[in-house]
Length: 78
Image (cartoon, rainbow, N blue to C red):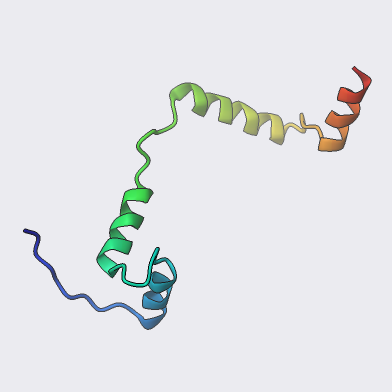
């Protein structure tokens, strides 16, 4: 059996927790538990994905980008 504790939270935080409830009778403990569970990434990015993202950022910084209109125009030509 789990134990409980009482904590003080600001009214605006309580209101934000209320807005995140899936149903009105969901407890704050359930809301917080769901938030904590969702905050952990079970599938971290692979080294390959990180390298691809870094390469994309370099392309962006170097101006090697195309607008959607440019891509669509090129696709229409093919």
